Image 1 (cartoon, helix red, strand yellow):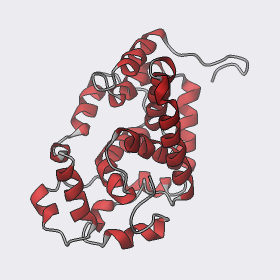
Image 2: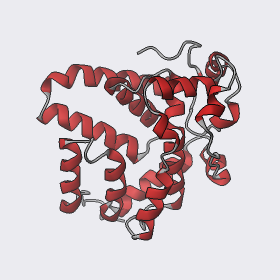
Image 3: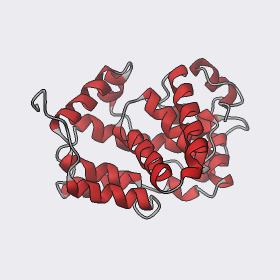
Length: 237
């Protein structure tokens, strides 16, 4: 625990990686930056993230179950009923050329980095949460109605940060606002509008982060949305 008067600081080695992501997040994505942060993260900051995560309503059951869904094929999703969550997921992937995301196994990258010792300081609860988060990310696009376009993606990340104060989502905000501030000032208004809308809607909507959406694939999407405070047609963008 740092001294009460000691200000937490960013490690110079981590700052180099931050700059890489700020300059080109396609070349060096936030998912890489997230993993690179842990060897340099202040102990107190990690403790606060973990404590806040544990206090989130629903987190205890989520962490106790450690649920990870079995892989599902595109053909199976396409056979789901018209208007269902699963069919919406299928259509989202195919319409946006994201079929490869079904085969992407973030857990393999995570496990590789864990074996290297890079993630030794990441609490086990947060290791599970990031893997599950990647597993449901595209499903959350479907539930909320956000497209994968740049500003809609940013709105979804702000939405998720409002529901779960997790460092990965915060790094999206830091990356985008740093780029608009120092490199692309014309982006300030659309970026801040996207963040503000997503954040406010995330605060107003029942938490979507801990649900087992894969078990609800055959249910009507419009009906599934309503109990969470999402309109049947999806969130306004």
